[in-house]
Image (cartoon, rainbow, N blue to C red; front, top):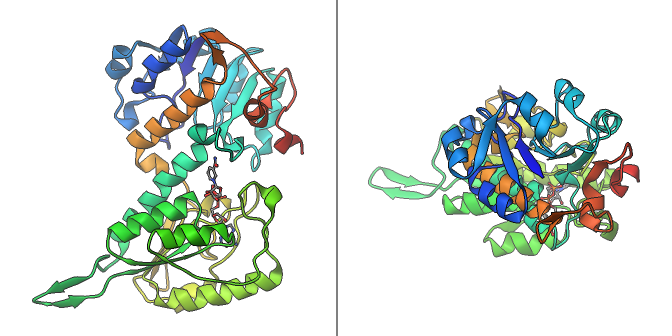
Length: 371
Ligand code: NAD
């Protein structure tokens, strides 16, 4: 089997497979690794670094003509889909729950495509979980971004020029990104509080030394596989009131609340933003799915009545070297499902293989998409 690493769109700095994964792929049973020229440049990963590990630089046309397995973080664009041949395998993070339009062309091309954002949240799948890896990066970077936009310090300072109070940070959604944001905000010395609709999140928040904001009456479902579900109107009202009270005290709010495949819940109302201290910062990681904050503009930093609102759902691209390394390890671990003692085999009996497959012989396999 030959694996081809495709370059990403111009707005993306990451690359799906990094040089340090190439030798592991070759040991796994991949016969040859081709890398599209310049694919790793924006992540600081040169052609020489790939070559040293045994990958060959190639053009996109050569890769589509020769490779059996293609890797790309972002969905293939129309011109790339036209170059696919039947049975060619594609692996990436294609967001099919929100963007179903990707399904038809991949299936018409008779490609075999796997979208790693459909991985089940099981222990066995953890090492392949691109959502967790990228949420870790996003949560960390969100705090750094907030710190550079905030007109005050994060930590407390006791100086000859007086005492500086620590910044107060409110985290909305204590999943993977939220917990990493808490840990990073604590490391910078701020006072942190967080809330989530899942009761399991409370213990995790407390274990990181942050305060958990309780809003009673949240709905949970065991069938949601560890994810949050849509809340009742009554709860949303109570939650908005609690957020309004806590936002007035906060210097920074990090929004991470998401519901897979749906619009992000609206949690910070316009009047809440307007009640915040001027100079406060909101970083909305849910911007691309509508945002948790009413005034968020996706992919933009705006000022609303003196409050800085950063709408950025692609923070992993701003830390491309480590984000790519994590993504790459996730792909390597996923490919281990297909290579048994060096032999390649597609096994749809495996729940992870079936769950992530969005195209095979013209049909969607994933029960979550077919659902
Ligand atoms: P996510 O990105 O879908 O959502 C982020 C957080 O927002 C979640 O904690 C969610 O509960 C919360 N949220 C949603 N709606 C909300 C609302 N209205 N108000 C407040 N908070 C709201 O979730 P995620 O970070 O990817 O992970 C969710 C869960 O899955 C966590 O329990 C995590 O530990 C678990 N997980 C398990 C595995 C695994 O076992 N393989 C891997 C990753 C995550």
